[in-house]
Amino acid sequence: MKPRPLAAPHARAEALAPGAWLGLLGGGQLGRMFCMAAQVLGYRVVVLDPADESPAGSVANRRIVADYLDPKALATLADVCQGATTEFENVPSAALEFLGRTMRVTPAAASVAIAQDRISEKTFIAGHGFPVAPFAVLRTRADARRADPMLLPGVVKSARLGYDGKGQIRVATRDDVGRAFTAMGGSACVLERLVDLQGELSVIVARDEGGDLAAWPVAENLHRNGILDTSIVPARVGPALGLRAHTIAAALATALDYRGVLCVELFIAPGGELLVNEIAPRPHNSGHYTIDACVTSQFEQQARVLAGMPMGDTLQHTPAVMVNVLGDVWFPGDATAPREPTWSRVLAHPRAKLHLYGKREPRRGRKMGHVTCLGGTLDDALGTAAAIKRELGIPA
Ligand SMILES: Nc1ncnc2c1ncn2[C@@H]1O[C@H](COP(=O)(O)OP(=O)(O)O)[C@@H](O)[C@H]1O
Ligand SMILES: [Mg+2]
Picture 1 (cartoon, helix red, strand yellow):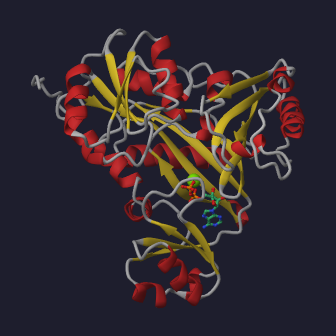
Picture 2: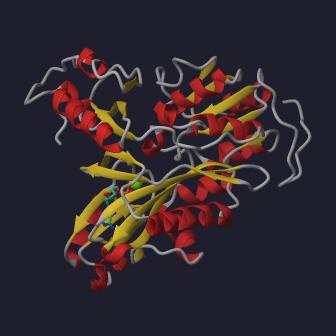
Picture 3: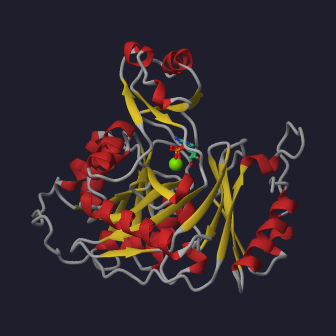
């Protein structure tokens, strides 16, 4: 591998000019949208993903099918790329750290390492004085047996590898906590008190090499079965709450000394108190609307920050409602065989922007695509979203 000079931390290193190769760890839909945005700017992207076929792999300029820690694959990335990023928060941070020795990597391995473990994530967030739901760490069965009744009813979440509500079990009693801990295979978990949710918000921020911040408007998120269903932007909250959400997100990005695009998920607790739920060290599903409704999308910003280029404006020019399209849509009623939805009915709405991720196999609960409904007003966008949900058979 060719040695390359290391940039001093925090210095604004020379920007990577379009034409440069950017490495992407992970081949999912977030990576697919990153590839497309980076390519618009003239960059070339090489995707590393263990799967033969992946949403990002099919649009990348080059792909490597291998494990994230495969030494040959990492050596190839180090040789080909001038910068690297990730679209998948469970990518081993050691892979990012290795690449970071010879190239610009955003976000840094250390930030990803914190976010990919709920224990280090919650400990970091709470330890820096940000409000979170009361929680405890469960490392052993004894911890589960001794669980603080103040945390019940609660939810046991596996410390690692959870997403879209997977790796979570609701619990009402200490016995439930013990059973949930066992069901998680006895690996480390957190027990978190159930919050009487008044709503959920997210704030996506980008922070560049020089520490400058750019934030998109606050999104209002509706979940179904632990999976994001709809994002409404701008969120229908008062200015004071919106400002607090932005302040928390910006302060968290700064506390992490973060580089890149970061999403902060927030709960609105009774009384309007904001609690940080979790952070994602990458673009986020609740920011997909930025492609169609903002001057600069979260994916373009990811490429700009990675390249060391100036950040683009995060201004939202059009009210937007994003509806996730899950595999369920292929299985109307009790259908056992998938049936392709009638996409023309979605496209018949001229202000609806359909995004499909090119996944061949629809499965219930699997994210297959999304529709961003634009509107002259938020009410218009909500109306279009409601009509499209009806047509696709997505519950209102
Ligand atoms: N403590 C809690 N109280 C109430 N609802 C919760 C709690 N934790 C999670 N949820 C619900 O489950 C969803 C998914 O949980 P989250 O911790 O964000 O995990 P994931 O990594 O799957 O997104 C949240 O967006 C929220 O709707
Ligand atoms: Mg979440």
